[in-house]
Length: 235
Length: 236
Image (cartoon, rainbow over all chains, first blue to last red; front, side):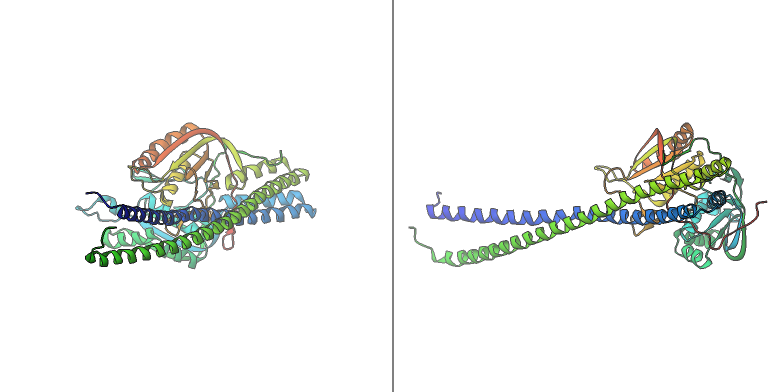
């Protein structure tokens, strides 16, 4: 059946219209995709901003230190003060102060049907709790009398947990000096702390928290430095 | 001309009306889209200029930081400080992370971005803590994660559901491989421990992992540490 000329023209016109509508739709879709690119710029903005704040604070610290030298203070005394600060940061000086003590212990009776792993304290719990306490502003932490330093490993070696190269067995006692309210509240928000509470009621492990007015946290032994060299900015 | 059929009049009118509406909507949409495009472009340029500013500020701050550190080193040397104390200061600065350090070590790249035909479990703060712990176990003397120096008091936590904070700074990378971990120490031990204890598990989660031996530079710790409650006691 052949179409009449006028109808062909009509269909042609309609096709063009439909095509036009399609293009409009596609363009609208295209712009929607574009916003993604813009959103990706935001995290890097926030990150750089935060890094800037960190740098600005560090610069202030350096300026203050430099000002002391420029004021003609006794350089030897300043260097010794700096050394004391560094050793304090590195955990090489024993400290005392208020804080909290967490005691974790394996369950005394082990169930037969369940996974035996549920009845013991794993090194990951200790590692996670230490991380949480730092995030809560802890100033010094020790586990079973081992000071947590930059080089400290909390590593599972079968029947014991290795900390600072020493073998530790349960009960594990985590002591942290810091603001007791902050330390308690970060624990309350922490999944690991919650989970240990569940394990206490279901499997009988020990999870105890005490507030202590006067904690003593011993100094750590400095790691031997063999490979790292300080980079001199001046030269 | 062919005679119009009466029964066609109604459908044709309806189609014509429908087309008319569609055309007007399309025109309207087109207008909105052009407006939206314009606004978007403006926003993009605004965001870009802010980002460029912040970036420039960042470069400036880094430069100032280097200059101040250099001046401080100079000031220490000029004073008649005992060289033994200066050496002690260097060592203590490596241990507490306040010195930028350089030395033989490893560079680890971890890529947890989504890939085709493969499910990838994204890296969590717990993963990073475990990797750092293993590097410490391997005797690493200095560690950094995305250029943040890891010290004793470094906390690694989520901010929101996916941004990871290290030393309270977000370490998310928008472009390139998401995580770079550098460590200085015995290269054989670092490679051996990382490969055997960490790499396999990560690979099983669909994550791409690489470790190379390299002389690396690790930046200084720039966060703050204050001792308000902890008082030093006599060394015994």
